[in-house]
Length: 369
Image (tube, rainbow, N blue to C red; front, side):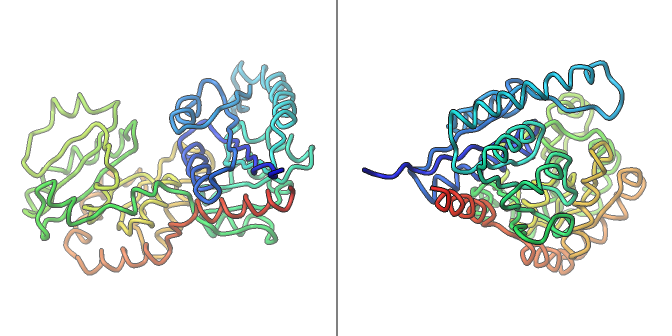
């Protein structure tokens, strides 16, 4: 009789920063152990409800919501939803009987991780940011193993069982051919590409600052091309009002981020955890503008981590419009400095994060079986 293959339950959701690393870990688990059974727990109405099934995994819904720091009437229902989520998580872990539960953050990871611990199921925690989120802080004492992406997060957690593994990223980002991408997009070897992105929805602050400065940049540097991802919220208005230019490429969304990173000589972007990990893995020098509208200002902590090792320049949002040109000019003028930043990024990248975490999960699963 053949032994049961490893059964893994992954809980994480709410935002892409929690969902996509979870999917990358799941893919790596199946790559290392093709017979492994991997399923997800998540909410019905957030990103995971669409992204997880699209990636080929079953999603088991859990009722949960966060407690808002600012008072809202929704907080009155928080205790009820929390208890319901705990009951659902208890039943789910009992029905699936996973060998390991993996939590990648987000509210849903809390009750599922708690249920796993109560049932004696090993819990693996993965933290994407330099600042450890609330859910992972609560779960960390219960976890058999913890994986973090930034040294700052590692220092905030118990030494034993905490590993600096990096953030799982899409393998395609590491496989792009820079020369082929430049040829496909009619870029010469001497052209300098400034990649600007505020994420899929876009950043009003980045868009407004670049709107102010893009013409001056293009005039000052005849070899500079600007690839500008506006985001879905802002594309139409910018497309109507900006002056067209042969070296300005305005895009609502970039489908081939592998090629965008491959051709980019410098990036101007937010400092989300996955963005920072992608910049390191693709050795892309960057000017990072942390969003001030995130919990515990964690994007500033992410950006500072890259800045301190020489892989990026941190530009606060309140200085963006006034200082953007003076920040970009020295970098666009200095290929040697960009090369040094790229080397620093490469030296601190952890492109095998997903496989590292997957092997640890399977190690725990084997030990329990």
